[in-house]
Length: 165
Image 1 (cartoon, rainbow, N blue to C red):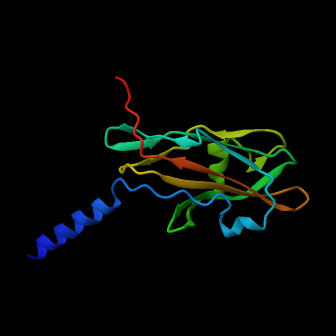
Image 2: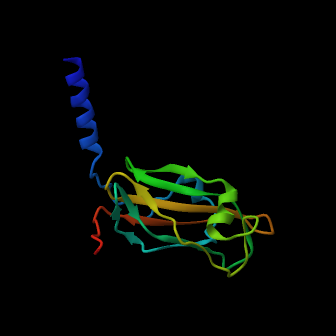
Image 3: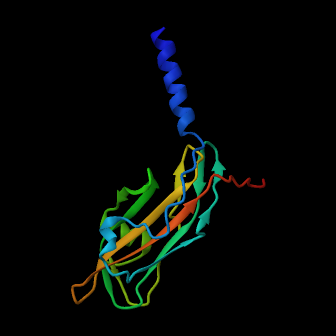
């Protein structure tokens, strides 16, 4: 009887998680740590609405992310991603700064003025098909010592794209 109950609870928990789509965050809601910082880093995702493909047992939401500073050189001091659930932005991950150079092509986390930096394979990958929202953020410092930020949302859907073979 105990094993049947455990199996039932396991089945119930996976069915609750499977195929869940998360609601759209309010337009003006951003993580608290970014609210007081000037927005001087442009962050762009392509595509902004991202439909998955399936490869074997994994789903891939393939997109790229670019960053640009029009105003000055900026040294990135923190970057990462939030995901939206329970009516708030929740920190998913802050990344190691050395990964910025490898992923975006910066040198010593430094963005030159008016130079775009792009992570071509910034993909969401997972075994479950569900849509949701992420917000990528970047916090940097100008040569004058001012702390600035940039952020942008990306919408991932559960609209599976069938690949033609």
